[in-house]
Amino acid sequence: MSQRLKDIMTQNVATVTPQQTVQEAAQLMSQYNVGSVPVVENGKCVGIVTDRDIALRAVSQGQDPATTKVQTVMTTGVVTGTPQMDVHEAANLMAQRQIRRLPVVENGQLAGIVALGDLATQNIYQNEAGQALSSISEPSSPTM
Image 1 (cartoon, helix red, strand yellow):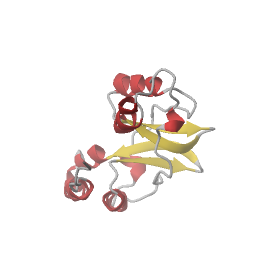
Image 2 (tube, one colour; image 1 turned 90 degrees about the horizontal axis):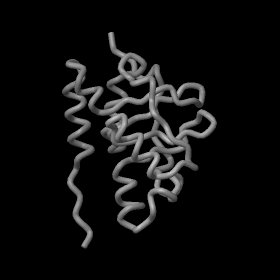
Image 3 (cartoon, rainbow, N blue to C red; image 1 turned 180 degrees about the vertical axis):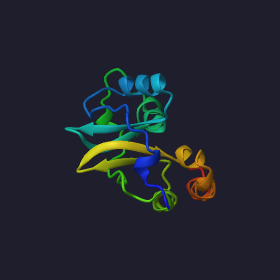
Image 4 (tube, rainbow, N blue to C red; image 1 turned 180 degrees about the horizontal axis):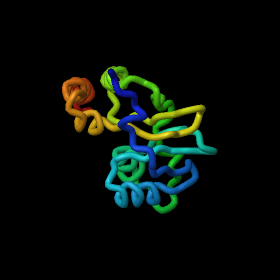
């Protein structure tokens, strides 16, 4: 019997709104020891902001983290899963789309999040997690 995302997802997810500052998002990431935070407006996942987004789209551009809004650096068009989605299907989706974190949405509302690490800690999914990580970690050429 296959597992569903609802069986392995983290349910209590720290979130930010698009109007919060990059500094607030970074503080949440530090507090919860995570590398990304879903961006939620009226319960709906409208984006995700990662530590990489903050570093590349704000800090490296000289923007002030205390005044820069999350909406200016977040990634939109986020790929999501559902609580009923099969874990194998989720792993394949993550590999295909080259993403490490999959927000889980039910009835248009954020219900949880699944990270690649969640798949790796489940013995039966270690192979899928490895394949997904291999696909996600395709080397890219530096732009110089």
